[in-house]
Image (cartoon, rainbow, N blue to C red; front, side, top):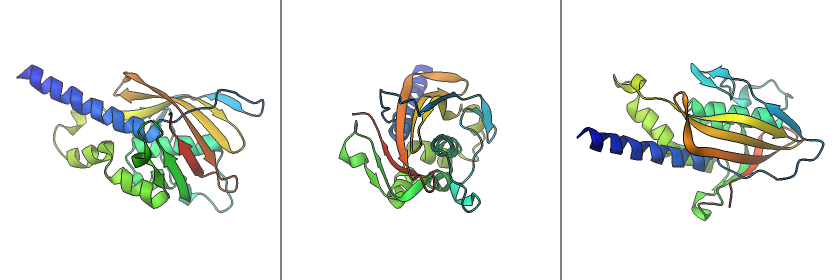
Length: 196
């Protein structure tokens, strides 16, 4: 019986990983022009979870005229995802953004912020957080987070090397690269595309 329960938990965690990868996975350009800065991110805290993404905030709450750097947009998006704050996640996207996972095909294309928000409502990481919230054993389950290992930033693009972490442990084979284009006027993400 214990083995069956353990297998069920492993399948469930694997499904959560696949869905987290669907949200965060994208390809990174192989060439680095001199204008792109590389940055290693130190560990910080995000809503009580050790994280490399930084504090959770909404890009919509920034002072008027403040423009996000591309790396700030990606870190903010990942921090909001880790906190399961869908509104904060969407705040880092332009209203007409396109998120596309080329690996999984056309069904995973989100055209516009509203479509992305709708997709997050059914994302297993968000659904499981809502279902488990308030249950007595919830604090015994390790959090699933997307952690940033390094960032390559240009004027209106950003590439991120990341890994999936379950509690204090990196998830095996849970590494990837993401790339996004941002609106130079706001710093919000216009397009993100996953590997194909």
